[in-house]
Image (tube, rainbow, N blue to C red):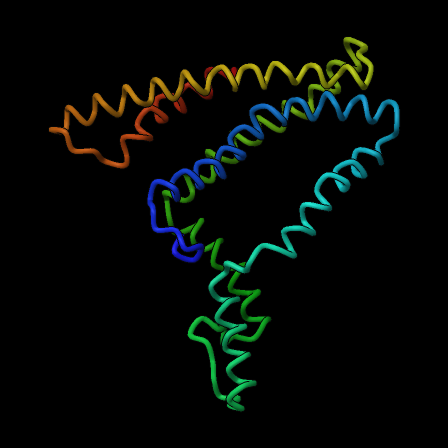
Length: 219
């Protein structure tokens, strides 16, 4: 927030909360609705219009972001500053501390090999990767199966098949406040049990119990 001339921690927390709120309500509300509206658009205008409408909505926003938003990536900022100083001072030996000294081929090889090393040598990363891949595999399997089931078996039209996704939005939107309330009670109970000392792991303690029910729920 210092970059924007704001020192209040409350304002900073509010801005971050508003920013994260879009990521929270997007999958909860807009994702199920997109399937419904996308079905009507595809049925009446053709599948190409689904992409044209997205371009119309996001294109102006990207242009405004490109014009008005400032660069926030530290390596890029330092690289531009170093290039400007090299030009002003006439010194070609100036280099940024964050500037990569490796050739592009070696950078590409490191980017490909390093994640594989983490995956093979770290049991925690391996277990998290297996869990996330299972959850997202089941989720997207359900997404891709719904159109086939409702169109081929129940003979839904394309524009009405998207209505089946509304149940996902209602379920997630209903479960979110319940999870928040349950999480708050769990954090308060664990903090009192720990003598009033809060630990960051308390926010994730209830998730282990919920994840243990994943396999029975799928079956």
